[in-house]
Length: 330
Image (cartoon, rainbow, N blue to C red; front, top):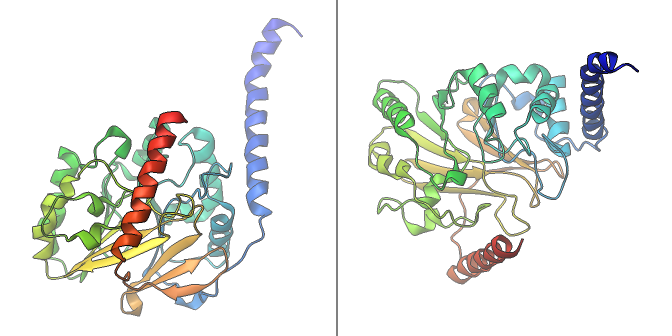
């Protein structure tokens, strides 16, 4: 083949290889043995929000986007024309490249228009950031598809900082100033990291911060704690929801729910430990249900029990040593 012809054909060959790779990944997901939950479809409505943390799943698998169990669930939601909202709480792709974006777009299909994305450390790439800005104009935004005030915020732990920046802080202040003027009895603040576990605040006791998430213990504090007093003064229920949990061997918790006065702290995620999603129904008296996609079981989200001190600190110490060895030698 002449060199000129090869130059002309090369892009076509590259496109064919890309499409074949994408099709291979899709067939891998779609051939999964789907276990649909016993959560009845009739309970889904336009006032339902599904929260999904760490959607790519286990660190040990090779899938690029949504894991098999989650993809099965998403396909079922498409089949029943799910009328509500879906919020991905970060780490919904293994790497934020164009191939992963194409794959998750294909997996979601028509649900993409009612899906919202919080940036996690695995998603934090120029390609994924551009994808989100193209769809929502900014990384910090109101989730307009919900009938409840819900807001997505961007923090990035890998920059050694769990703070929200100046622009985000201004947005957060504006959000708070509007709340008592709104009729809604709820306010949802959405993050990837469980930022409340990294607060130096006397308003939040140690028990609320004692959560075994994917990083075990964040090394940096978050300025989000500076807003706690204002949040406590609101005449409504406030929900912090994060997705950085459930994916550290068998050691992190699958989910967590703690409460301090009117502020609720919820972590939901999937990975090596399980395949859990959180379903919130405003029209069912603010009910939260945990759906385990691995076995189809459903249960109501209830407050965590009090950790026995030795159990919590023993696991936390073990995990800190493990990650220290991992970072040093691997």
